[in-house]
Length: 112
Image: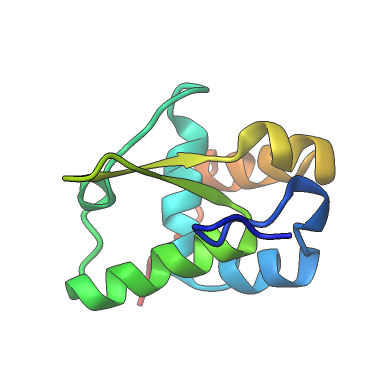
C-alpha cells in the first residue's frame, strides 16, 4: 500500500514500474547521481540541474517516487529527495551495483 505521498511499501515495489521509470535518461541520471552520493545523502530536486521546465521536473520526480526509487521528504518550504537504497537492495539485490557500474563506465544517461 502506498503512503500519503505516493511511496509504495518496500514489498510492493514493482520491477516493471521501476524499469519503466529508469527507461527515461533524465530519471536514470537522477538515480545514478543519488547512487554516487553518500549513503544517507538527501538533495533538492534543483540540485540535479535537469534541462527541463519545472513542471516536467515535477513529473520526473513523481514517476521516480511512485516507482519506489526515491523518497520525497517534505519540509514545508522545500523538498528533499533521497534514494531508497535499503529498500531497493533488499527487494532487488544487485540492481544498484549494476546502475553504479553503468554510471562509472561513463555510459550516457541523459543524452536527449
